[in-house]
Length: 245
Image 1: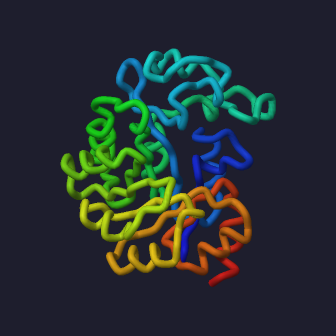
Image 2: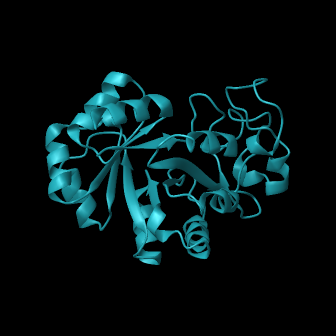
């Protein structure tokens, strides 16, 4: 049965990649949460999609050039300016803060390592250390558009579950993913062809498709039997999955 992964939390209605968005997503019957991680100037693993904070906060600058203390001074309301009061739930979260909240839950988390533009030396090691500290190996899937990063993650810890993010169609994606020793294929949903799905399933590779927000597209993905749909519209996707049971 296809599951629902909340893209950056419940990002349709709440500021993305904030504890507020994660908490609101967890109110639904979801399989998991998707989030993005980067490194601050002082080497802290923080949750944010963009390399800069210009779009998602009332601050400006590259995350790599700002300390955690500096980042915590801003409100990460994104597209929801003036809709939420300034509070700690819309500050930039650290991955450790997320894990402290997440550990008692029974869902998974897909952590995208944002290394396709900036390589963030040490990010993979720091994320793995946190996963081990909180004993969450079996509930975490790491992903990246930078497939070298995923190979590095497997070399650091073969027990880590890894997924290869792609934007364009890959020929025989199951063969490719399996050959490099990864567990999941994370395609843009419109790039998937029926033969891709067959090849992935033949190789026992999980399929987590992004970012599926329209009812007809969610229904199509459910019908094809993908492992999870990654979506901004948590309520809609959960409703459609439940109807399909």
